[in-house]
Image (cartoon, rainbow, N blue to C red; front, side, top):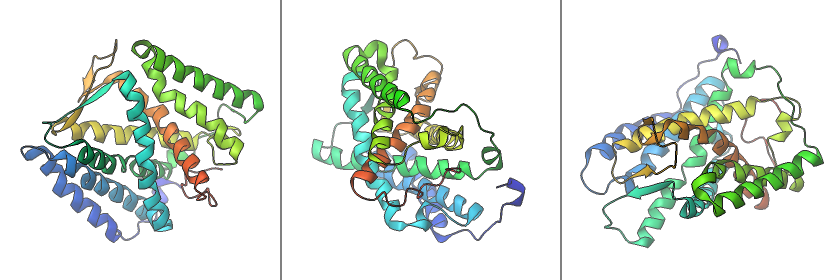
Length: 290
């Protein structure tokens, strides 16, 4: 869609609700004393998700929420185990830790953390879909072709397992593989099971879906780090060798990890959706092409 020919539709009501949530909980997360992010993170990021979704509706007349409310809720549900997987790996790598005053118990922490984690996939997918509507993305020409051949799939899977093994064995040196290994392991599995995979785009040289996910996740990453910086509780990073040049709490090179992280979320979501039988319409997330 050419940006100059975008049809400007009425701003949907859920967009107003999203803007209101951000306007309320952004200053609360930064301005209140004591424990606040534990309960303020979710409504603020819900507001972000709804606002981005409304922007997509205004540009195209369609969005994740308007196409299926049930599937939209499913994004939040799938996001919880997806992010807990990375929290589990981080128990070994210890690349980020959470600062708080220790006044809540482990059960309450788990529930509130899970609620916060539920916003990751809808934020990323909603932003990626918005990015995909812009003309510069839609006009991207075909590039490198990565086909779904047996050699590629086996190489992905074996490489992913090796990267994960190196990460767990020597986390100080191989911690960046956290943001690569999961995708390389799951992409061949999704293909084998008949679930949606990014190779269905790149096999014809179409990188629009990948670019949309990359840019969408970088946008989310900026807001994650920006809103976290002046909040408390918050997270901080301890990254070996590359902890310099911080933008907010994140070292500048750390933002590169958001690129493969986007692909991992895509693979994790479509694996869960396929296993649970919600993959009948694989075009729910619309990123162009395919």
